[in-house]
Length: 237
Image 1 (cartoon, rainbow, N blue to C red):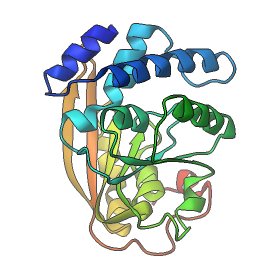
Image 2: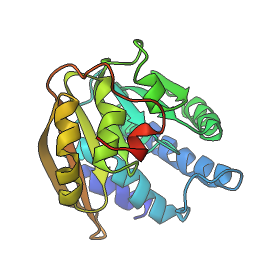
Image 3: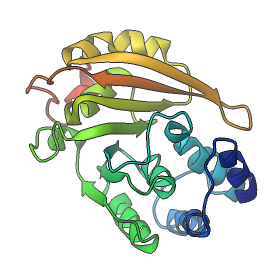
Image 4: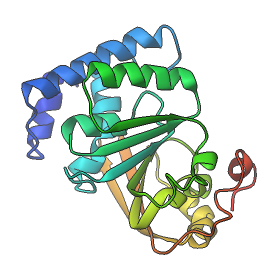
């Protein structure tokens, strides 16, 4: 997917990028490739692949109207090189984005990236989701939590649901179908005070299959969750 094909595809969803947004995506690509030589950010560095498998793939929640261009609070868990939240932020600049990542090198890259792209309302946090999830500053504060290829749903729900306001949404972006994951996560989803709402299935322009699991927080999450760092992964609910 060339940048021009990326712009044209967005137009089919009634999203038209201005010149500044196009420059932001191009600079994002340049910095991603440059920094990838210093730290491991991505295995995908060829330009057309980055535009397709990182930029276009990241903005699916916007294309399928799961996120609006409003000053809502979005948390991205384990964003790595900023996916999916920062491509979403470029297109919907009103979003208030917070990113948590456990590797400080990635946070340094994201600091430089957001400065270069002159992004406002972006907070970058180095640490574990389990720790921040017990912090009153961040717990129960977000309208949307996104996660892209971070963990199975049985683990991911414990890392994300505590951050949501009641009626907030977890958007889990998956490359493969997740019926088995959903079955395994039913206990966790219930214990955490949430409910599976829907699955959005779609294909990238090259035909690759993608899915978004939409889970809504229905009531307050018990205070014991998330458990201490590493426990959700070792012993899923």
